[in-house]
Image 1: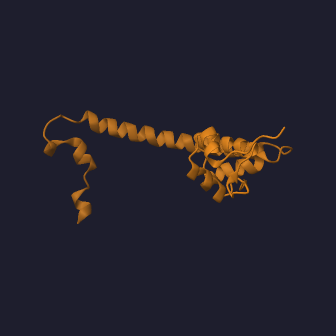
Image 2: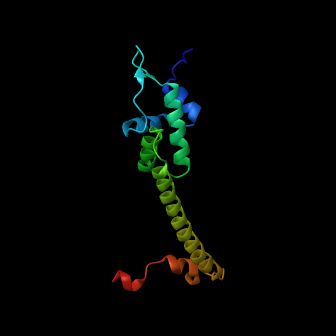
Length: 139
């Protein structure tokens, strides 16, 4: 039983991906170029659907294009150790943890500035003062 090929529009709808994004993934090698119909339309297979679903899930988890490329290469090698996959995931998790620390620092700083707001005039506004450049730095 053969499955009817997907048009790019059907593939986009099935995966919640924009057509332009699918074309981009093809251009950077994440998604293999599909076969063409006699009318020269792209004809995507169930394998394209599965691969694009993998890519979408990896991107939703915040993996970079380069990390997704590496994960896809590894996923195609079923009989090797998954240590490399684990290393990529751990590296990504460390980056997320770093970003969370940075965001928490940023949150604390902004919260501190907001607390100092006396709701007076703009000329006395601590938030505006914090955002404005240091006059000495402009000389």
